[in-house]
Length: 386
Image (cartoon, rainbow, N blue to C red; front, side, top):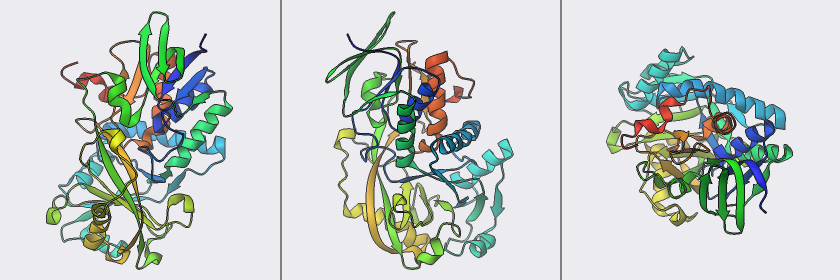
């Protein structure tokens, strides 16, 4: 007979690792199942670091969740004696009508967040590392910074295991079913039984969720590290996390962002940067670690345009995955097939910073059938066909 668990978590990545921890912390008997090793480079959190920021340009309704996320990141740091968060501030640059500046202004005004505005001349004087077109302005958020993403997942998994959670890796889930008695999970090597199920399978969510009216697209994204020609200008302590919205400037689109340099090899070799913009959709199993000449050009373009002193040889390129919802917002809800099943998916390239609070939310949904945290705007009800 298979072991019976209180909760099974399918997908032990960013959200799943945190969910396993929060469940085990409440005394639940937990099994985490992942098709890969944990942590691994075939993931959405691949690439060492991820930005965390409070003045959330995507939508002001995320800010209350972010406040909880900050507190929960601090708690796991203290419990594990592991440094996961570096507060560097986040600099936003863009045209006043662009997504970054208008979104930051809305979030800061709605929630009374600390965020200073910079004129074009003030931006040039305070941050001479950038050469920005006339008309671009800035906003500086002091509470932002970055998280060590792969280390964070590993830290949550280890903390969950210390609290008694079991982990089954390199074990793809073939199917799941629900009935009045509970949940049955079938994997390649056997069947596992639980009272509740959490699905947070990242790029593989589309197949395992069985929700055809909630389309998800998976895209290949690249992250790069460059050796600047003047590295002394871009060191942590003197240089913030940055975010540039070209808003069509010279044909550029998406959001370009990056990190200060660090001497910590766990953060990569050089100055890290990337473009936040969904690439071409691909089946998740077709996305490999292979890189191409076009990837290098994607990394170098914003440096040529906006950061000439950072331009230099590309040191490393890594590949990660976005799992995109149709509106770019997360999807977190109870599964329509069963009250025993909850899920989180569609984090659309901006979800990692929420992993601490999403793990807590999923644990509350599984154990209490509700959460007091404001996730209503992320629910299935916004999709007309459901």
